[in-house]
Structures are given as C-alpha cells and as structure tokens.
Length: 155
Image 1 (cartoon, rainbow, N blue to C red):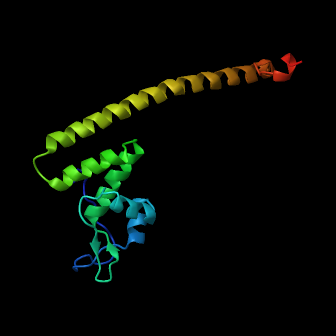
Image 2: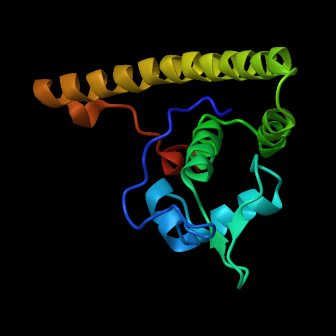
Image 3: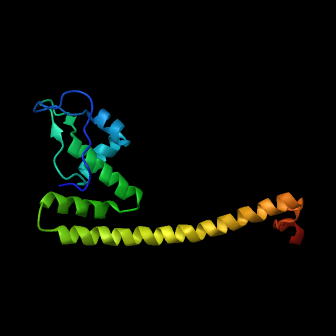
C-alpha cells in the first residue's frame, strides 16, 4: 500500500480492463514529462508494472499517479535515484519490511533537515547583504561599497 491518499482521477470511465490514462495525460496530471515517466519505469522506480493496452501503449491508473507523485517529491528533496529504487523495491515486496522503509525515510529526513539548516545559514548571509545595500542606498553612499579594482594595483 502506498503512503499517499488516493485521489479520484476525473475523466473517462476507468472500469474497463485497459481503461486508464495515456502517458501524455499521466504526465500532464503529475507534472512530469513523458520522458520522465518512461525513465522512472526503466530505472525501476515504479512499484507495479504499468498497465498496457493490447497495442502496447501504457495506461496509467490512480495508483500509478500516486506513486509518481511520491517519487517526484522524494527527488525534489534530494533523494538519490538509487535510494528511491530501493524504496520502490521494498514497497513492491509488500509486508514485512516496514522497519527498513521507516529507516530509509528517517535517514532521508535527516539529510533534508541538514540541507535546510545549511540553506537557512546561507539565507542569513544573503539577508545581511540585502540590508547593507538597502542601508547604503537609503544613506546615499552606496557608491562607497567595496568593489575590487584589479587595474588599480596592476603595473
């Protein structure tokens, strides 16, 4: 079972054996490219085989869309493809590995938290620079801000 809340897919009837969304529609609804959807499948990031029509065209269902959303969120937070693949393998394997899944998510959360802390520190420097420029511009002496002149010391 996925750890996402399934959302109904509005649109055509999905009750037939080959009903579902085309790859283009799945890409549009998930916000990723068709190329990315194909890549996720090739890279082993999907938890179930993507359904196919008799003609071999991919048909995506809500479960597929939910999983793609999970993958894109994990990638957006910096999880390596290798780790997403491992997570997908664990989910695909079913019950019995929940502790390993939890450990994987906890490790990723720790990585994301560390990155956020680093970004916050970097943001402090940016805010300081913004305040310096605002203050100097308001004081009318912004032209006194340090600007290296390499030619002045050159001979």
